[in-house]
Length: 401
Image 1 (spheres, one colour):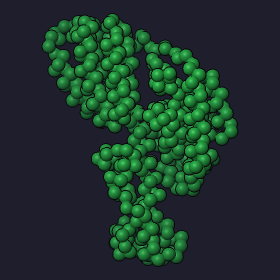
Image 2 (cartoon, rainbow, N blue to C red; image 1 turned 60 degrees about the vertical axis):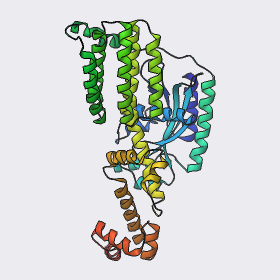
Image 3 (cartoon, rainbow, N blue to C red; image 1 turned 90 degrees about the horizontal axis):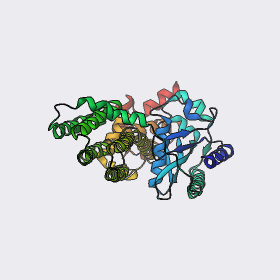
Image 4 (cartoon, one colour; image 1 turned 180 degrees about the vertical axis):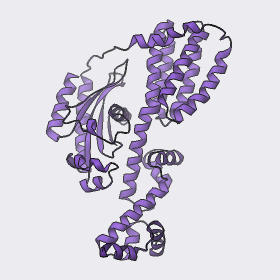
């Protein structure tokens, strides 16, 4: 952390970009070490869709998947760079994150800003070209690699009291549970799926705590019976996590860790401690990181559409750009923006055509081609349906006004 703090100050002072340290201990919850309040843009952002730690942790976990480096977007549409800090065995132990950055033209970013009240604050951020951002990212990645190689020790503190409480509070329930375990898990899977998909994290944790209690009580604290029930619970959690939009590869990795952990412990109390911690990791993956991933994906797709609206933009091609299936991209796009991908593309084309109509003297045929309409006739038809005016009438009306 001391070495990270030194580089945190170097990056922030030299580039005038916020730099924050993400710490991912082996046990317990990840933490964030931000810059001072004046440099911490995210602490003052009015457009908060999820907390800052979640967004930065998402970047670090994606960086681990992509050779130590990841460039992504926050829900406001600003650019961040994350570099992963890895243990000697390749596990994520933390990361350095830079941002927010305005990547590209400042006016374009301000025009598309989903929170207009943040425009003045965003206009004060450092702006870099795509090429410059890549150079900064490579240097950040090299620094993170250097820090990782130093092999600093890791803290192992976690909240024992809360984890024990989840199990010991249920010892009063040791009555009339008989053969209810299988039925309970089946009912739990249905309820859990609904809870995860509806985004109710608090209810999900309450359900899991109840199920863990039943597993321990029903198994009469026998370690062999507990292991069998926990592995059944793992299958349910993995399916629900992936269905919520979490990365399958990361979920499978956590599942393997869960299995190794269950096989390792011989004492039910110590096992309870580790189970509680690992289940929270599944919940972070299912709710918080999946949500951050969705925002990142949607901003990448919308930026691609804006830059390439003159071209054909079939859904399968857009899905390949972000390594998702068509159906999954459609689902998260509609959930995040409230419109379908097709409607969004059409809106972008209409808005671009409006600007072109008012800013230059190009022909309607040229504007239609530059905005992705197959011909002038189709452009006129779609434009009138969207605005209530023909392109020519729109131009004369607004220029006259």
